[in-house]
Image 1: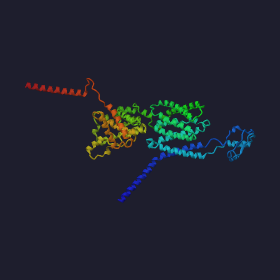
Image 2: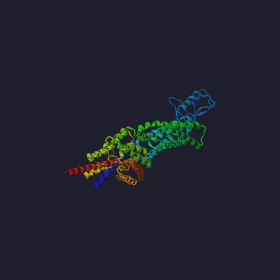
Image 3: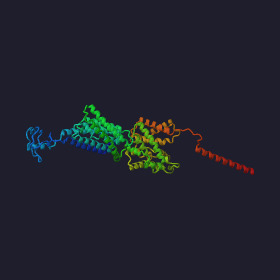
Image 4: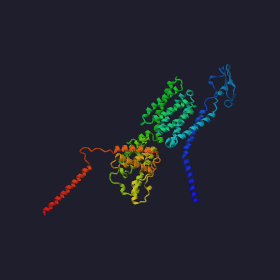
Length: 578
């Protein structure tokens, strides 16, 4: 017994060690990305603290040999002899004296001071490194699944790091410009924060863009030598841009977004000038330049968007709208080869879209995912009941073979989606819309032949839904198919039946990973009932309307009666003849 417990403990320790190394290996790309981003930001910061100015406080062009000096210049530090400038300058030495002529030796010392670069302020550089480390920690915290609501893919993190470094370096370089150094407002002209925030919001979502706005504003605060006015301007404009693009539905609306951001830049600068009681003399050209900044950033965002959509393969609103076009070749092929599946997909899309609106999920993603969730049925459409006009092909084959055909549509759908380079979110919906649930009908048929049949042999190979949208599509798929078999689908019967279907998903743990709450499920059920009650509504019978089947049956009955009467008359005639 002791040996058994020891072996068990050893096995658990080995398993825990393997899990640790697996987790470490899995997080290694993210850790490497963060380290590289930190080093890149540190190099940019090093440029910031290594000044381009010289130790001289004068312009060398103002002086020449033999000129009478107009002021006294004293060296504030000593400069050793070099091969280029062998002259030695001592700290506190008077290089030239006011009212005295400038000798050749004096001029050489002036030249040496004018061409000697400032030393790096290592104290400031150390402070910047600590500040950037804190920003990195905040970044990791904000983009954790607990706060973001999802696990961000590595490509999203890399893209936003590139955006951050672009803003950080642009601010650092612009801060060096002579006409910008003393004006935090003119510095804002050279910061394309609107461009990168708009791209982040459209490509990765509003919450991700909000977090990026805060991080980028903190980075710009450091790059601008902790200028609070620049920080506030960037933060206000960036957060506002996240909200502006929430409900855009087509690319042409980006032009209006560009106009709004131009106006927003002007308003933000004017408000900050009023709050800090700054001079208004430079307002016209400042506001004009800021308006141009906002408009150009909006137009550039529209131009770069298609490129980023293709490279990153993201489920942006514009990409989803393009995919929702039912005239694309794949959907037309489904309409021709699998018309029943096509109709089923449209109905599932309607159910999923309205349910996601009710619970605050991405309704457009759910609708597009529902359009494509059964594309794997196109090549073998005749094996799926919604496409069968009469004979059921599964009556001729073994239940095990039927199951392999039925569940293969998920794998084929995923393969087709990858060939089309559909966004990963759509592929997840295709792969997860059945989860690992049991194919009930064929499992029941198998139990009739073999009571010991294994349920796993009659289950899908997928994973349970991992997002709210995927979970909603799974429920909508089941409800739409099952409700077609419901007799007299009144509202109370629909409510009870849909609740039974949802309870079945819960009991089989198919909704454990998709973050749907019981409150969400109640709203989803109410949304489904509302739509299906309208879909299955009854109508009054029109005047002179006849049932074709009843009319056909009546004709058959009349023929049979006539034939029977004719036979009877014949028999009577024969009898009378006899």
